[in-house]
Image (tube, rainbow, N blue to C red; front, side, top):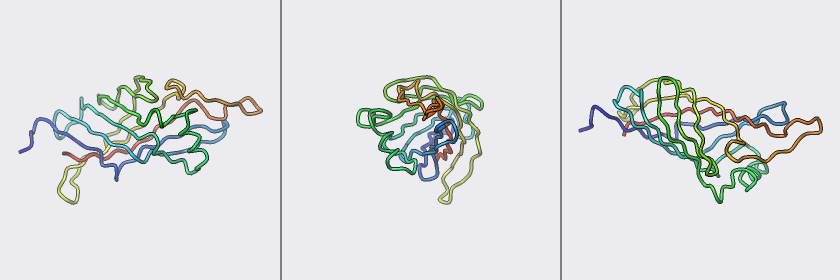
Length: 174
């Protein structure tokens, strides 16, 4: 019998997405997504996520920006250095509509806060309980050691410093 005072949730990667956008040449955004990730949340009750703790991990080599040459550059030691740093991790807590915690990229850990929009709870087709969240926020890539930079002839950064995060997460109660 499940403990009715606590709930464990697993990320359903097949119904979730982890996306990002970054400014290119100060004129347009380049979008991408990490395709391999896993995580869990622990809530104090099955129907209330206030105070829930979150543990999330992304495989750094799993992103796709729809450009093989750019993706190879981003996987190199100039950016994610996926050989030395195979994962990005996040550990945090949900308070109100904020998911705040420690984000680690390239062994650099910084506190970040994401807007968290709880989109509801429902029953899956096999009788499981599911919950959804939309998460949005911004980080500065240079804060995490992603410092490669180059200027255009006009003096603009080829790649912006601000990274916009956009995630849709579906959880399944374990």
